[in-house]
Structure formats: C-alpha cells, structure tokens
Length: 217
Image 1 (cartoon, one colour):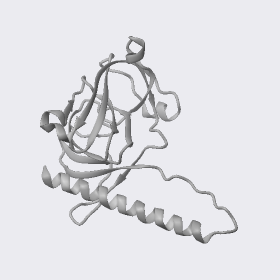
Image 2 (cartoon, helix red, strand yellow):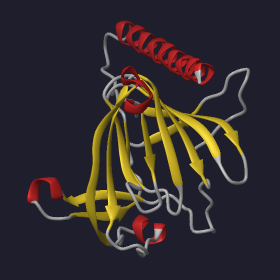
Image 3 (cartoon, helix red, strand yellow):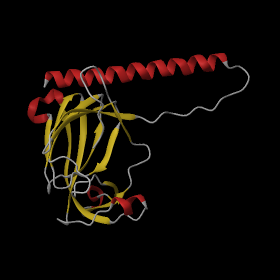
C-alpha cells in the first residue's frame, strides 16, 4: 500500500512539474510579445490514472487528483468496487438506481437521447487518508451506491479495485449521468439522465520506469 501511495505521489509531482514548466514558458512568451496580443486558453484539468495490475476477473489502479478535480457521475454495471484514499481527501456522492435493470445506451447518450432514471441518494461523505482505514475506504456494490462521483477536496489519490473489470460487449460498459433533479433538495428521489462524458473531463495516463502505459478502461 505504501508503494502504491509513493507511485501516486510521484505521478502527481511529475504532472505538477510539467504544469509549472508549461506556465513558465507561457509567461516567457507573453513577456517577449509587446505588439500583438495573443489568445490564451486554460488547459483542461487532467485526472491521472495509474493501472497497477490487471487480471481477467479484477483490476487494480489509482486515480490521482489535484484539488477541485472531479470524476463525473458514472456507474460500474454488475461490478463491485473497493476504493481507498491513499493521501488527501475526496468527497464521494453515490446513488442507487430504483430500476434493477435500467435500459442504458452509450449510443443514445452520445446522441443526446439518454434516458432518465429515478435514483435514491445513498452516500454523501468524505474519504480522508487522515481518518484511518475505515474513514478512507468505501465499497460500491452492483445494486448499492453504484452510480457515483468523486470530487477532490485536496490533492489526493484513490486506489480502486474493480471486480469484475469493465468489459465492453459483456454488459460492463461505463455509462455517465447528469443530475436532473436533486432529491436532497426536493425530498423526493433524484432523477439522473444518461449522458455523454462531459467535454471538460479528461483522464490521462502515467508512465514511469516501473509502469507500462495505463489507460482508463
């Protein structure tokens, strides 16, 4: 566990160094340009994924966040996921879909025709590495807390063990959702709409001398 945390910290440090170097280059370019203003854009924040181990029936990986980064609402259909905060803290918000067998379609979602699904709010808590194993761990089940989002309250890393892993074509594709009605505010069940991944969500890869290239399933 300590080794995984160190590798996650190394990924975070390298990304921060690359960002600082890029910012320095941009500042130097601005200082040398005195006549024509140039358009600038804010790079998309990238959540980094480290793929640590993969077998046919499970995968182990870690997501590395900067403060304020979010993994949007998504599911793990038919899967159990153990999450452990290795350092820092993150907010976990999760829902249970009322329908045990909802009709989900990534094709419809990408065409802006995603269906709406009633859901119960079931988890809204902070996972913190400072709170020991119990306070840093959360398990998501196929029919309990399966649709969830992570929001980094500080720089943090979250270990994930997924069993079975995502498998497109075997009913285990990742589906994204947006909150249409917030049950916590209305006193009713929430409404989630299946949607395409938000355009500002980017999940990158990390490679060091010990790792192969990794990517989000």
